[in-house]
Image (cartoon, rainbow, N blue to C red):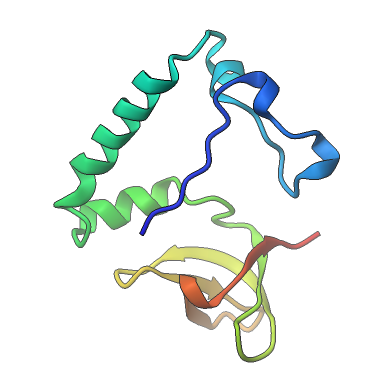
Length: 120
């Protein structure tokens, strides 16, 4: 299961006070009008191109390369248990989020069990 939200047009970007993170649009970032159907086709082709490599080291290397908040302090709130604050290290080969706490220990959290938020 993959859920993705993409703001294509500049007018689709929510007001700054309505979102937790800075938001932009493909049109604003590229400086040109975007054909939505072509964008969808191109995006699905890219997703499909990774499908057969999903358990490979190349896949996880790329995932870690583009991982949001990597190297930053974050707060993980597991479904059960206490919140953990630490540095986001990456994603392991099982898809678990890796957090290094203040003591230097790395803990793993399965993505379905946590909420990731930057620490203010």
